[in-house]
Length: 58
Ligand code: SF4
Image (cartoon, rainbow, N blue to C red; front, side):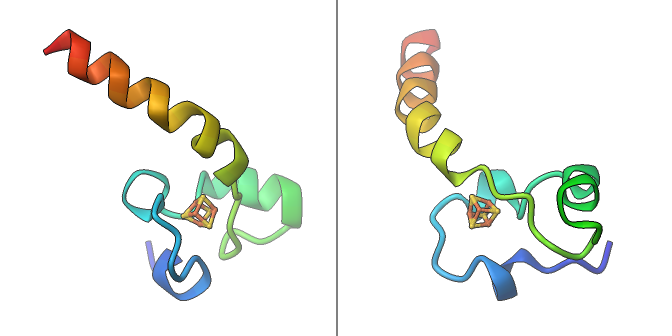
């Protein structure tokens, strides 16, 4: 609840939808609930498709 992605992910355009990623993934990958679980590469590929889907879904 105290994790603040704005400090670590400064400038990332995906903060509103990612928020630093899953806390459990951060713990499993890095052993720290307070670290990020970055999926930016995935988001950069998926975001344009999500926008198109939402636009077409009306
Ligand atoms: S994509 Fe990576 S840098 Fe961007 S908000 Fe998520 S964890 Fe942070």
